[in-house]
Length: 422
Image (cartoon, rainbow, N blue to C red):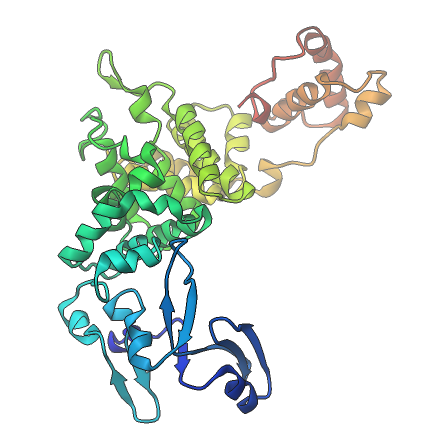
C-alpha cells in the first residue's frame, strides 16, 4: 500500500485476510501451506505465487525475533503488530479504499519513519527493525521520528542478537537501494555501526592530505563515493564502503599525512568484516580483492605490458575500474588513470590480455624436470615474456623456460612479477 500511495510500482504484494488457511486452500486449486503456525498459505495463480496470511496478533518475543505465540485476530490487531506506520496500511481492492488504523497516510504525507506504538516494544519484538528504520529513512530521504530514533540509539547494541545473515542482508539493502550515504551516516549516529562494523566507525575524523583529498577526512570521502554509486552490486558497494578501512590503523605524519600499506591492512580488515557478516566465500574474495587492489591504479601507466595485462584481466575488473572512478571523483577528480585503463581495454583484445599459453607443465616434464613449486614460477616467467612480446613462439618459450629453471630450482620462493607475486 505504501508504494501505491507514493505513486510507485509495488515490488511485491503482501496479502492479508480474515479467512482461515483451510478456507484459502479450499478456494484455490494450487496452494501450499508454508506457515501453519502463522496461518500462511502460498497461492499459485496465473503464473505468479502469492503469500496469503491470516490476520493475527503476536504474543511474546523471547528470542527478539519470533513470536512465542500467534493468535488469529482482526485487521486492526494485525496492523498494530507491524513495524512502522507507513507499512501498516491495508488496501481493499473490492471497495477500492485504504484501510489505515495506524496513521500511515499522515506519516507518508509528512515524510517520516515512525514506529507503530511504543518503539522500544516494536524493536524488542525484532531487533532488525532498527536497521529497517534506517533503510526506509535513507531510501526515501526522510527523517526518523524523534522517539523512534531515540529508541534505536538506546537499543543499538542489541542488534547483535539478530543473526549475522539478517544484519548483512539489511546492510546490503541500505548500501544498494538508494540513499547509501544517509544510511551509513544514520548507522554511525545511532550506534548501530559500532555493533556491526566498528572498523568503519574508526574512519570518522581521520584526516587526509589536502592536496589529494580536498573533500575532507576518510569518512567524508567514503560517504561521497557511496553517493556517487549507481545501481552497484553488493560486492562493489561493500568495496566502496571498506576501500579505505585500513587508513585509521596506518595513519602517520612524515613529510605529509601518509597511509603506507593501508590497502593490505584494509584487505585484512575487510575479510574480517565479511566473515563476521557471513558473506559467501566468493563475495568475500571479491570484496577483499577490491580493497587490496584499489591503490594499484596509481601505477598503471608505469607498469610493464605483462603486469598491466594481468591487472586488466582480474576477475570482474569492471568493479575495480568503477571503484577507482568513484575514488577519483570523490577526491582530486583526476581521471587520467581511469581513461588509460579504459583505452587499454578498448585497444587490447582478449588474446592480447589472456593469450593461449605457449607451453604447459607437460612440456616441462618432457624436458626432464620433476613437477614441483618451481613449475608455476617458470610458467609465469614465460607468460610474462609472452605478454611483454619478448617471446612469440613455442621454441622461444621452451628456450626461456630452460634458461630460467635453475634460478627457481635454487630459490623456489621468489615469483616473477605477475599474479603469483601479488
